[in-house]
Image 1 (tube, one colour):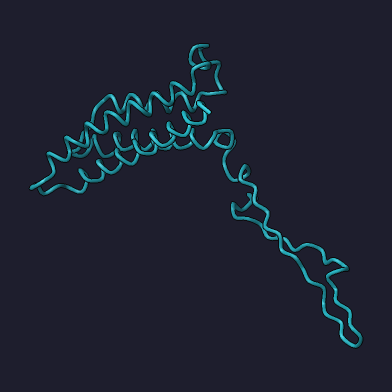
Image 2 (tube, one colour):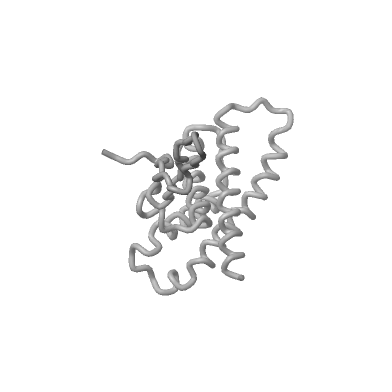
Amino acid sequence: MGRSAWPVQRPARAHSSATIKRPGVTIAPVLETRVICDTEKRLPGFLSKMSRAELFIAAGAALIILTDLILVIFGPYSFSNVIWAAAATALVLVLTHGRVAMMSWASSNYATLLSLAGLVAALVAIRELVRDARFIPGRSLDAMFLLGMVGLYVGVALMAFGAWQLWSRRAA
């Protein structure tokens, strides 16, 4: 049977010093409750090896690709292929890092490539945001259009935040 992902609370043994003894009065021992959290056991094996920045980049890239596959293909919203290519590149780099023998230039410049992918996605998304801001006023928009916009901009924000974390940690 699988383990629960929630923290496990186990009572500790009562300490003899925790038992209060007074003449005529005995108070029961005090039990301590310790919360045992093991975050590495909660995540699947390959996710537990990723840093927080890599997880943000992977989540944003996956959201952009899923938004494209579900909402853009079947809905009226579309965005630049450059954002999609940056997201796909970042997702491939994150998922293959440390698992497959990467080319030497990709493994040595891993943080730079991920940061560059996040930067490119953010810059092109700013252009898309200006285009959307010009298009939206005065129009009645479909829910699929709005979901496509939200999926794109949240994914780009996650990628940009992860790239910023990765770059600031690399520079320090």
